[in-house]
Image 1 (cartoon, helix red, strand yellow):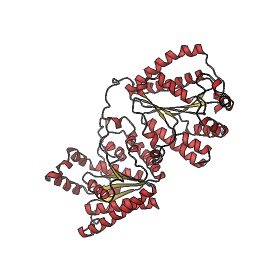
Image 2: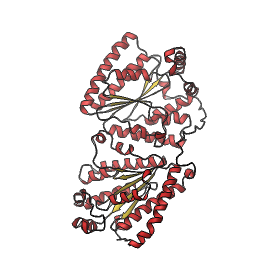
Image 3: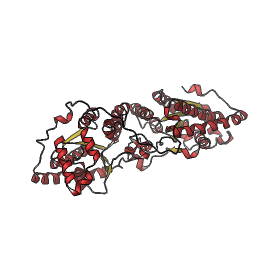
Image 4: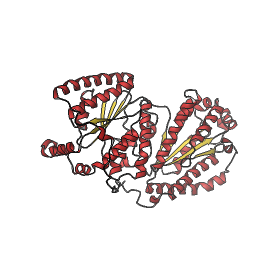
Length: 501
């Protein structure tokens, strides 16, 4: 594959000087159009050490308007990054819609380097590349443009720069301290990089290999490749012409969804009548389970095992009360509760999973999501805020996300609090009649209740398609609040205990 980038292509000074002004003008025009079209762009800068990647990044920041470009350099991992799944560091730096992020180093760097130094097996590298390909596909389907640039040098050209870099062309003496270390394994890196490129070179996210021996050719080729990719993407984007760049992000307009015919679901299998607990039994059991969870949480802290707990359920099913019983069992320093409401403008400017990646806990801590990423296949599906294509592919995206959490060693607990439609009505009426509970009932709650059957079908599909061996769903009978609270605390403790082994 790399032979095509070892042709010794050169650009003379006059040609370079003549082409740059037009190229910069078109890049700036394309950047403005990206803002109008709200297309996020990720430019991945990878390649052989010594190929001048740093110079290329500097050139891009000169040629683009720097106000719309963020350079994200992925160097050594911080303790904060090591405490979370591998892709966390990339998700939190993804660009908002209409902006550009230059990833200097990327999700490719660690797997290739680790395999070159025998820290990963071939099977582990293959799995990492499959996960990368899935990430890129997911971002692309959400509207992002990913431009992947591989800057290549032949072994001979790299050796020449190492031998006497100051005699090279302007700026080429700025070699990374890693260059000599990696040059000793040039053949290994070439083989692994070739395999990685082939495994992730897709129609939607192709690789572009750039001959980097001549810096002028390298810079023009990189900028030209980026420009072509952006212009093609804009040409295929219906929204490329509208609104001024300063226009705020608009909330999605709901699309009416017809109510489905009532059909049996997994919720119908829950025995609500038998799931009850007497007050004296509740007091004894809740104390025992809270004590157990307390001890397990501190053991997890000692062993640096984090927990993610997802609370979903019907309106008025008792999520808040159950969360308070969980919190009462834990040291407040270990727990964070994230309430999820309608996305903000900033959150709408990113992939829907972005806001959840941001809140993943450090090693040894617990995070409760009061509602979660499942909004994509529940409220967004039923209310029409997501298209069938968007929520349809979300099942696989969510399962892949959760698999990464579990593979990292996190304890993931997913709870759906279920009750009958009649019990929900009784609780709604109680809230309306009780002064200190009236803030809990809204017009939206009543509207959601009218779509009970549509939500029941969406819940059935959610459980059927995302309850996996790694991340199973637990449906908690919540007709009786005492029973539900004990089951919630017990389930979280069981999951944490199983993860700790």
